Amino acid sequence: MFHTEGALLKSTSVFPYFFLVAFEAGGVLRAFILFLLYPIIVLVSKEWGMKIMVFVCFVGLKAESFRIGRIVLPKFFLEDIGDEGFDMVMKCSGRKIGVTDMPRVMVECFLKDYLKVETVVGRELKVFCGHFVGLMEETKEKLDSPVIGISSFNNSLNQQLFSCCEVIYMVNEADKKNWKVLPREKYPRPLIFHDGRLAFKPTPIATLFMFMWIPFGIFLFIVRVIVEFLLPYKFSTPFLYFTGLRGTLIPPSPDRVGNETKHGGVLYVCNHRTLLDPIYLSMGLQKPLTAVTYSLSPVTELFAPIKTVRLTRNREKDSEMIEKQLKRGDLVICPEGTTCREPYLLRFSPLFAEITDEIVPVAIDFQVSMFYGTTASGFKFLDPVFLLMNPTTHCSAIILEKLPKSWTCQGGGKSKIEVANYVQTQIAKALNFECTSLTRRDKYMILAGNEGVV
Image (cartoon, rainbow, N blue to C red):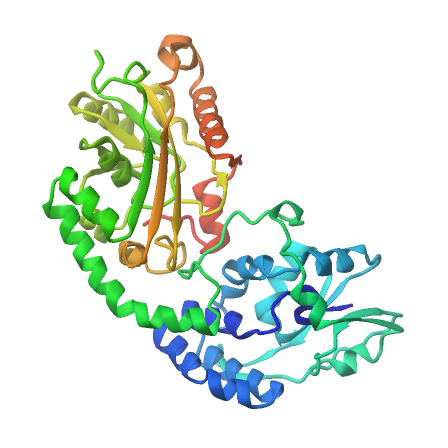
């Protein structure tokens, strides 16, 4: 049996995790109220501080639709695990029991799904008419078999449980400060999908900076949108770079890709990180591109400074449409069909492979500093707002060598699936990402409980 906060996580404060619940599930106002109460939370006892945070974060939320503990918090928990604490917990044989001071609904999915912990002991939240009332039940768990406990010296909320242990190993807080962060390679289960808007751990200082930034960020969003729409690329690109929208492009050499071919335009095939991927590519190449989209909200299409064409999910109609657009000029398509934030590539739809031989893979990576501009469970029309509110972003694009004729459907006799897998592999190698067979449907079923149709 181990204490999650005391023996596994490096951080001694649980405030950031409650703030994530308040912000992602309750909204900005609820999160701001929690932030204002932080001085009181620090001054009162640990028990009362926990009760205040639970009440502010959970009161009024629907219990059935609460997903934050499964789709948002695991990322931040994993990034806070101490390597030494993880090794100590994993070395213990037998059934593993995770104990937490936080409500069980916040921690259970993280411990069971990502660390393979069999049992999670934490406080239950009281529910009335399907909504959380912001109060916790008392812990009444009993241990029937001999247990070895791993905890910390400052643990005060679960002393009764750990008193049942035959042996207790105490973790010194001074030692925890020297712990290293658990490397991604040691995750028992890889973190591929996660949701939420915040791209940083909301410590009190970082949260203060965020609230101070939001008014200026809204102004900056408006300015950036106006510049993108009104100015040509040769003027808008340096201006946007000055405002924090940074990017690097490794272009193809002249002997690799021409602007036009005998068969029409070039089809740029990109992995998908954000809704700005086609725009950055167009700005980097300094020429207009048409973006083929699988599913995009009408508001996002409205804010797009380049032409967009929506697929109908009918293979014959979509093939005809793409062929028609290629005759008019260059296209860019993201065959993953949805974004992935982590260093993984989803399965590529093979639709593009059978349409043309003029295929140029493009490897794109995108980093944000404060907000994620993508969501599966939230309001998608806010995607461009959050993305362009970031203080800084950085997009790196590598234009790879055009597919050789031997690796195309028409010229090389390859199947469309072989071509799609080959392009996926080439992009993954360029980015040092890992290929997966997961699809858009898999992502939305995990994060939102639907098939992702906008």
